[in-house]
Amino acid sequence: MEQDPVYTSQLHATYNFGKGIWGAISGTYDSGGRTTVDDKKNDDHQDNSRFGLTLALPINRNNSIKLFASSSIHTRVGGDIDLAGFAWQYRWGGGL
Image (tube, rainbow, N blue to C red):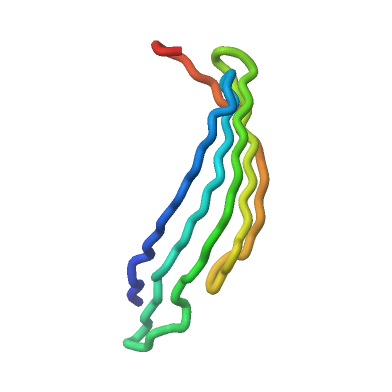
């Protein structure tokens, strides 16, 4: 079995609302990954794109919460998924 490389491009636009609050809009595009088994090329070339949003909200100087969501725009091969979640971020060290 062989697999061609999968190429990924990403685009992010971020906006700082002030007071540690920021948001981002993101897009990704994946292409490639066709597999070959016993010299027979499979019809599994990826051509997938996704869209996402992130919002970061500070709790205090060291802690913040990030809310995020992502959705498939176009999926030729692979998972056509939507997701949402949150992350707790703790920062320490100089420069805070």
